[in-house]
Amino acid sequence: MSPIVKNIQVIDGAVNCVYDIFQATEDEFNTIFPAGEDVAFIDEVYARGSKELLDQAFNAIWTRRIAKAQAHGIHGLLLYDLEAKKVYYPTRRDEEARNPSGAPLR
Image 1: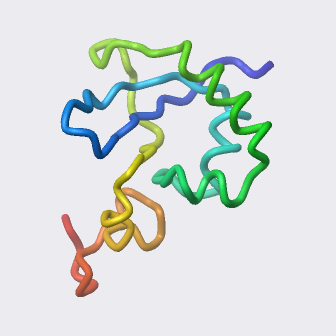
Image 2: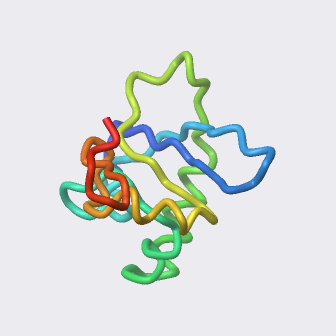
Image 3: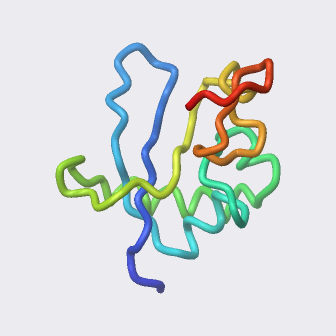
């Protein structure tokens, strides 16, 4: 098993979402985020991967929540129930976030 090296922040559409951060091994991270991407939508993750492999990875990741103050960076964003946000992340890279018109968000 690879050492834990990547932090994933989970953003949920629920009103009471607290935006937790979880640690993932390099292999787990790569299972969720294709090469070069750091934004993922859960429906797309499951559409392109093995449900069994992903369930196994997430079951392990969910045991590794860390306090935000202890996180040394956020390496990926995982979004649940936020399909409307897809238009802002056409490249699935946070630094390339765009308005629907194509204008940069930053």
